[in-house]
Figure (cartoon, rainbow, N blue to C red):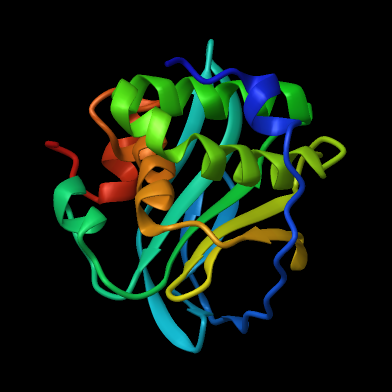
Length: 200
């Protein structure tokens, strides 16, 4: 079963809403002029910047992404087993259409999950995709946060404002993380940077 962009991004409406405390502190890292805070607060917990890097495509800088965890890790398997909230913070380095981002998202899912996983999580991917579908494209400088909130699910914010949330299970969020950290990542150099493990 191969998930399609249209199927995952335009079929279901996200209906759950939840409030999440989001904080920030002094800048700790800079990627091509884009700054990432050393710590952020998600669901009342302080998360540490694990690593950050630039997503490039055909030499074009698309976005910078940072991974936040309760404790720093350098191994994908360990990260996927981590308890507590998590965050992938994305700052766009150029304008990106919703369709382009959605297609890349689903390509990453398909490359890093097997058929059984895609079949079992298809409805949750569709709900997550519907939230992305609420966006009217991304502009240079826009900041997107994709948070895992234990007990609630996945929460998406854009420029500090909630776009939507999905009561998905951790397996669906882990599948999203594997877009960047899986065996077939969207960008191998970005994976190494987010893991803060140059030799990975």
